[in-house]
Length: 438
Image (cartoon, rainbow, N blue to C red; front, side):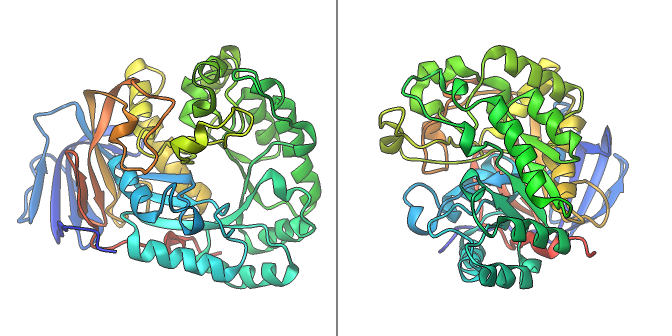
C-alpha cells in the first residue's frame, strides 16, 4: 500500500530542551543514519539537512518516542474496525514510534503461519516500528513451532478464554525456558458475569476476580514462572498483588481519568475490560501511580465500529480507541502536577523497552535508534473522535480539554508527523530484532 510522501533525512539537529535520563536539559541532539549519534551543548553546530530549533520555546521538549506495549490494530478479517495502516497513522499522530499488537485477531495469532502473515502486513503498511505477541496455541505442535521461531515474536498474551486451554501450562513453561515475556489479562472467568445496566459492571467483574486470576496463573506456571506483565491494572489492589509475585504492571489512562459514572453516562462507548471502577478506586490507583508503583502506561487501543458499540449494553463489545490520546492525557497529568515529564518518559518509553527486553530504544542517548517525539507542554486542545486517524471515530474522552500535545514525531531519523501532517517513514522495523540476547 502506498503510504504517501516521504521526508527522508540523513542528518538532523534538534536544538532545545530534551529529557535525558531523569532530567530536562537544554542542548543539541545530533541524529545521523537512523541513530542518535551525539548529545551536545546549546552552542553546538554542524552541517545538517534539517535543524529543528526550539531554543526560544521553553515549553517544547523532545522525549523518546512512545513504546506502546498494548494495542489491538485488528486487520485480517476485522479490518473494517482498524488495520495496520490506519492504526499506525494514529500512532505517529499520538507521538508513538513503537507498537506491539495483541493476538486476538481473526484469525487468532496462535499459529506461526498467521503470525508471519501479520508481520508481513506491518512490513507493507506500518508507519511505526512494530511487534506482535503470540496467542496460546491449541496444540503442542503449534506451540513448538512458535517457540522455534520466537526470535521474531515479542511474547505471549493470555486472555481469560485461555485459562482452560490444555496447552496453557506448556505455554507458560515454554515461555520460561525461552525467557519470553507473558502478558496477562487477569480476570478469572469463573468469577465474572455480565450485566445490563451501565455503571454497574464493576460489581460483576470485580477486583477479586482480577486478584484470583493473578494467583491462578501463577499457580499453573509454578515452579517455572516466566516473566509476567499484568495488563491494564484497574485498581491499587491489583498492582500490589502483581508486585507480590514480581510481575511488572501496566495501566491505561482511562483507569486514571474515568470511572463507573462515565460508563453510566456513555453506556457501551465506555465499556472496557476490566470495567471502569468507582471514583474511590480510581483515586487510589492514581496515588499508586504518583508514588511510582506503576511500571508502564499503554493505550489498550481496541477499536469497534459505532454500530457495534450501539448494540444493547450487555451485547456490545468491550474496548475503546486510545493510541492518539495517550500522550495528550499524560501531558495533561504533568500540567496538573500528578507526574513530571521524566516520569512520563519512564512510563511510556524507558520502562516499556525494558519490559519488552529491547535494546537501543526508549531513551535519548548516543547509539540509540533515532525515535523521538517533540511535545509542546502548553498547547491546548480538545479531544474529538471525528479527528482521529483511526477508523474508530468515537472516544470516552470526547470533548476532554487537554494541555500538552505531540507536535512532531521522528522515526529512524525521519519526520513522520509534524503539525498535523503525516509523512511516510523511510524505514520501519520489527522490534524483535532489538531484543536483548540471553
